[in-house]
Length: 495
Image (cartoon, rainbow, N blue to C red; front, side):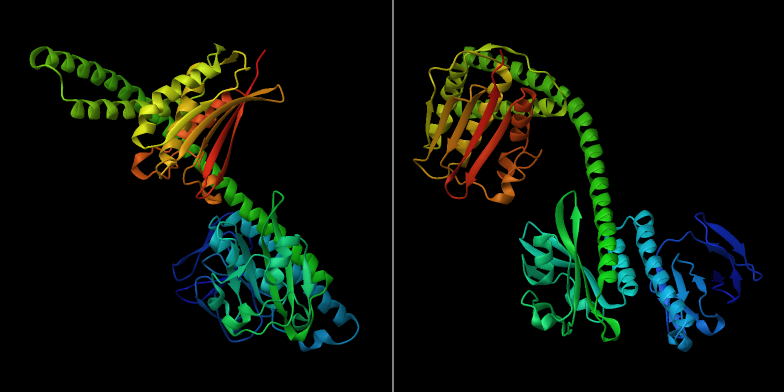
């Protein structure tokens, strides 16, 4: 392997290493030999070549065939000029086939190295498709990912002569060869696309490219197919074969591992941030809780003094102060509940009476919103062992949310209690509100997610789910946009 001085052009022979080292040039320049960072760029034409990563130019007339050039950016340029004698019969042909196999194995090794050296997922996937394009001798290659939010397929990383026109190009779910591969989770080779009904022409019509044949393999992460690797047009009018399919599947596995690694890293960072936020929130919430207690006391003293000297206090201003102090207290309590683990404080409780008290409390809010609030208890339910304060908070959150969701006058919120399989006591909160779409349903239990705008904190449902799970129970939701939602709490019957 050679490294070339960027100042005087002098070349030095060096060896690959996993550690960075330096060579001092005779001109005084220090050449930093980086560990292999990028990928092996095959150079098959003589003349001047440009590094595909840093764009530095190299005069290949200085180098022999089958040599390697270590670029200062960490890229490795492999000089492999075609040899006219390699295609002759006998041993030369065998050697030629051996070199082809070596090149493909090098490409497979390169994709493995990329995963360990590059953390930028966009750059990583683009370099992998470049390696794969060279390794399988194709005209183009793309990674097509399944966008579950938009229910379509998006071209994420693309190589080839028309690659710029296909960046972020989208296909419908199940469309084209890639759509069929993602749906079936099985690799596919189509060597005559014109004769295959699964082929979609839309990408060709957009880019002006002409597809002859396709090799496509699924990207599977933990049993979920997240996309596909697609190669198009085998060079020299050839067809994709079983060896190409095997290598394509191997590369797909590497891509899936790379994406999964990024997902795990992002999840770990998110967990660390949430843990740090939780610690900070706990400390702040305790301080705020103490200040709110002082405000409550001060408000009571102020009310007493005003009534004693001036008579009845004006309700509007006083109620506004009391209501907002209560909202702050609820927020602080939610923050404290969510940010630390706690064991339920169990006691024998009449669940129907507990829920009846919540209904009585929320009747005023329901009347203000012109919502009919009713409770239909199962009178046969015996007293059960629960944490009454925790379950009270859960049901109160659900009822308050249900009333807020009812945007039309005359809508109803109905609470039910019942038993399920003699193992669970069930509490249902059913509303005729606006309902939720699938995307919202996937996020409602995440902390700080709210579709109420400034009216919500985004912690109510997170706290509710946490308390229910601490009881060993579960909470489910069923919702139809425009028709309403039903939240169902299952509490295990403890004996």
